[in-house]
Image 1 (cartoon, rainbow, N blue to C red):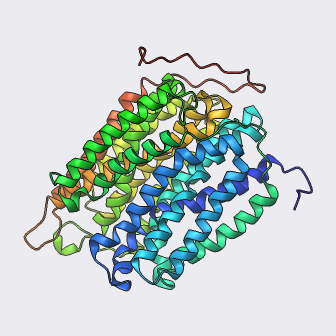
Image 2 (image 1 turned 120 degrees about the horizontal axis):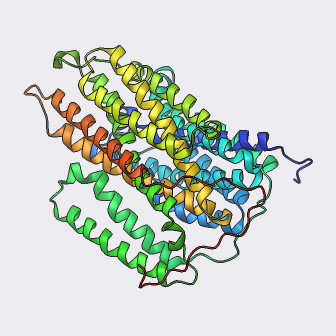
Image 3 (image 1 turned 45 degrees about the vertical axis):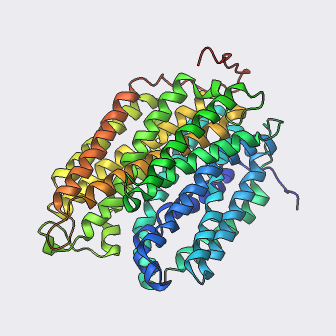
Length: 477
């Protein structure tokens, strides 16, 4: 059905924000209720973790490929495909009779990750140049906040309804958003004709899976186990093969000239470290709150109460992420990146050493949330403003992927540290959590150091001139 009128940028943004929020929720919505799913589907602890791992692997593989497809065939079409994948995946998960079907459903949901890169691309295509920075910042805040809100909402939804409603409710929302996107999102005016380099896509998928799988399962397998070591070795080999193929290809999946732009590679490294810090806190701060009071340091909070104690963090992230874009008129994206990294570092240190009262954890979480909001929004803005318009999708997609890798590293490291410190009664020791949040603080401090290398963002012109990337030869690499 053709569109009957020209969609305003404000309406376009509303649809994109709703789509991004739904997918962002899927990142963390099931994390707090894995024990409930394990019990209901009669499976093991090791097997149920694949509900997270399968989603992680699928989204990591799909992100750059779907971002590239969006740049080629149209971001509006790719958005519809991504939303359909989320809806179908949620439906299958909601009716899954066993853990195997649930894992397949999570793979389908993972392909919806294209919502992120194509949304940023559509914003850059459709918005006036002077409004792009604000819109990108608010969208990044929506994504970051949604990623954490799953932890807050999971407990109340499961308590009032059932864990399957963690998929029924997003499915209903996604179907509605899909209809709105079909009618209201304008066709992409900027496309890059070409075809997918499937050898590059295969190699990229190979090294991502070989890297993320042992990062996710290393604690259970053992970091020195043969399959862990073999997979890490395979990741190195496949990454080298992918890198060489991309350099030599006349039709690269990811243009290495773009990836070596100073603003891109420095921001991506910040994203790697910040992903580690952010998800280390997201995953284990609720666990710290739920440790029984018999441990001498825990609060014995329920899943729902732990989620409520995370609200200051989520609220701060939403507010400061939303104002990050407009703030660039007075405070540059780089300055916000530095300030955000500093605040996140301070927040992590406060959690590490001042967690003997609920209000202290809530305040420290709020400080961490302010840092998250500023960093998340400024990172995406730096990427979007630093690459040619026709590469917005693949560039923002790769930044998302690098942050996902960082999240896997951070979660794996923190999990190993917590597991290595156990009290005689079997409960995790306080020292494990303290050391873990010191590690996330160190990741934030390292991100601050790298942020000093990030060039200042350029301003988008109303009518951008063609951007020419420097020639890249194997010798230069």
